[in-house]
Amino acid sequence: QVQLVESGGGLVQAGGSLRLSCVMSGRSTFTTNYMGWFRQAPGKEREFVASITWIVGTTYYADFVKGRFTISKTNAKNTVYLQLNNLKPEDTAVYSCVASSVIIRGDSFVGGSWGQGTQVTVSS
Image 1 (cartoon, one colour):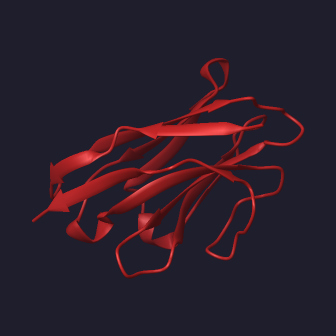
Image 2 (spheres, rainbow, N blue to C red):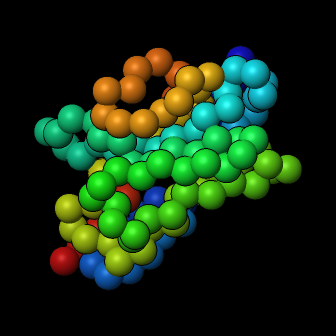
Image 3 (tube, rainbow, N blue to C red):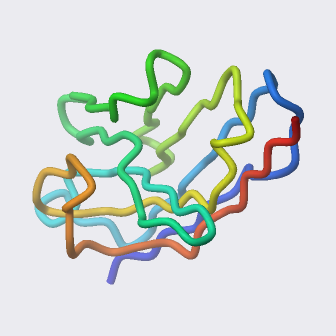
């Protein structure tokens, strides 16, 4: 069974940066080749942020990222990262990572194994 634990969230001023981490255990290459990050702000729908594949490292980003966020991985540590730069108050949300056997791309993604999330709060 895949387990995901996120960390790295916190309170930061607008324009600041954070690096989120997602450590996966119980991984099977055949069932969890795709890793992604989503976020959900209070009163809003969950939205896709970025995703990456373990084997090739192909990345996908939501349009709103616009070069501010970067997803990366360290296979040896079973860890996926999300670097958040130039943060804005509207980036405030709970950020969650997900592992899946199918491609993760877009808000309509369903299924996978999810972590509990880490809170990111950006003050103006």
